[in-house]
Length: 361
Image (cartoon, rainbow, N blue to C red; front, side):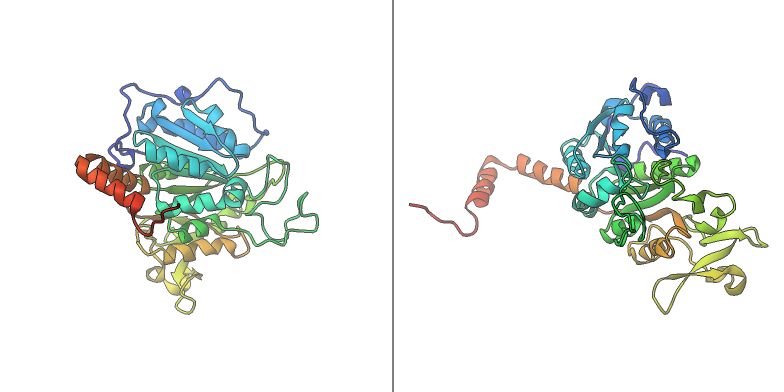
């Protein structure tokens, strides 16, 4: 993993002259999650990754909502805010817009972000605010003791759905791509190397980065991701996405690559799983996350819904450049502030008296 300290995403954020170590980002607070929770691994990965940014700790802010994952700000020796249910993206938008000198992060869960916080999430994504959102997906409500969540599979039996959920679940990656997010990725709590690499790419992106992290809840939804974690099944379940490479997975073929792959489906306009031996490597889809049109990325994301998690693309789905909301808002303020006094008065008058006006007597 390497971080480009000159990355546009980090421009304007003061750098530190002091060498930092992971322990510098640990607080004196007792980490309180259930034994075996995937949050421990993600916290360790983030604490190990933050020194690579080379930023002052006082210029890093973590904002969380409500849920097990939202304890993150207590455990990171940076600035942070444990905010209110679902509103972390809205609060982070205000911070990022007001303070260009901050690296702003959101930590949220599938319930917090996709239920009460759904609107805040999609609008942060479409606006392309310069912040990084880590969405922990354990497909259950853990903090409130095991109710079904917006990502729980249909038929899920929980305390709140004793006869099985009748809801159709969200696919967070599909949702983000539909909201025109400029950076969308998925990773796994148990794959430290992949998780850290995705975090590095997300941090280097200027705009809203959404990283969905599959995170196991050992108490209320243990084994939800066994298909992509079990040594005997993960080769067929994980579809790795690597920029510029044919998308292959499954047991190794004679050439060393996966025996299965993805190809474009001319009939549906989507993608389909094929046997490499039958179609040849040249027929496989070459992954391009930088393509401006998100159609293919969306089609790849839909594979997750085929039997739910029997096949799951992992990696960066989309990574494109687009002007950010906060940069443009600050530019407008700067233009207004540098205008001549007469122009400022004219603009203020036009704003107050523009359009239809009434005199109340």
